[in-house]
Image (cartoon, protein in one colour):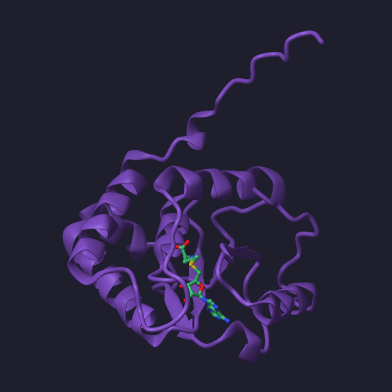
Length: 182
Ligand SMILES: C[S@@+](CC[C@H](N)C(=O)[O-])C[C@H]1O[C@@H](n2cnc3c(N)ncnc32)[C@H](O)[C@@H]1O
């Protein structure tokens, strides 16, 4: 088989200085508070992995600045904060059933606003701060107004995954028909 042609690596496959700094700050926050709560699995992706997921959504599903992004099982909102910096979506919200992680997500946002002037400046251009809704995905009625949905659903029950599928299929604001699986 002939060798595959070399593929140029566009620079935005790499996390920017700002997103890298945001993750460093979030790591410090987690060292102080822990990332765990009282239910659900603890687990997150690295800065590079989140960047590659979002980059795939930009390339294949039209994620852009005007988008509204939802993370289903949002933990302490790390993915939301990343999406607000790259590709700098208009608004981001999460759905998280663990009330302790939701409280930590609020504290993490305040921490970034205090410790990271670039993050604070980026938030000035948003219509509203990010929000984590404390609810099980099985109890949520709609994913509206999300235009793009993300989930890292490791540890979720089969019932929760089925609920995500139903909500995803029935949400008119999720216009994109392609699904990006990375
Ligand atoms: C693997 S973690 C991912 C956290 C976050 N998205 C990230 O990547 O940093 C999965 C999250 O889903 C939450 N979760 C599990 N079952 C859920 C459910 N039925 N409804 C809402 N959130 C749920 C867990 O509490 C956990 O925070």
